[in-house]
Length: 236
Figure 1 (tube, rainbow, N blue to C red):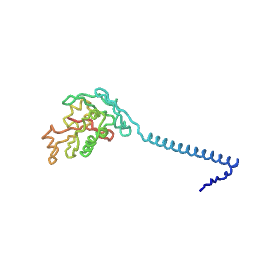
Figure 2 (cartoon, helix red, strand yellow; figure 1 turned 135 degrees about the horizontal axis):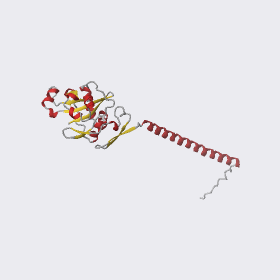
Figure 3 (cartoon, one colour; figure 1 turned 90 degrees about the vertical axis):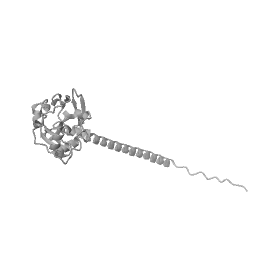
Figure 4 (cartoon, helix red, strand yellow; figure 1 turned 45 degrees about the horizontal axis):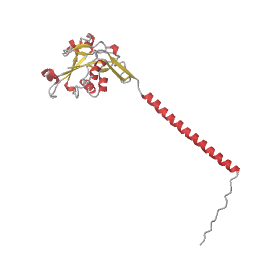
């Protein structure tokens, strides 16, 4: 058996005009792809820029609070959450003084914007103490900057879950702590309220348990600066 090899005839060769048309279409296709790719890149850059500007505009400005000797602390906080009207800059504060049974350093509040307001309610004070013990940031919000060195030192969150029924609220002049607060100024005494946190049981009146166990009572000193109640000192 023999095999016969059959060869195909030569295909027709394209004319010069057809070759030019193919080249032209290829050039146009590459150009179109480059333009489309450039548009995609430009769109991506625009999106990235828009997101970046959005993030930058959403970042609120911050402010730094620096309190000098003997504390030497520096705290950077949101200027929106900590406005100057409620939390004045450090130069507005009197120098820290020594006071208390342990003769420790204690801060004095700045009196700018502080008024002798009406007595704070037990519910208000209980909410403030809850905020004070919730987290470090909420403690900053609930207190005057004169108290912030105590917060930085991690020794502030001992007033937790205080019931309004366990609070006795009085003016500083009637609290027995006039001598302590007078280290700052007579105006500080006039503008400060004191809330005593009385021990349990809750079935007994707060006044009775504070009188029976005064060593177990805590004292929280409060001021009202432009409608914002703030903790300025705690004892012991």
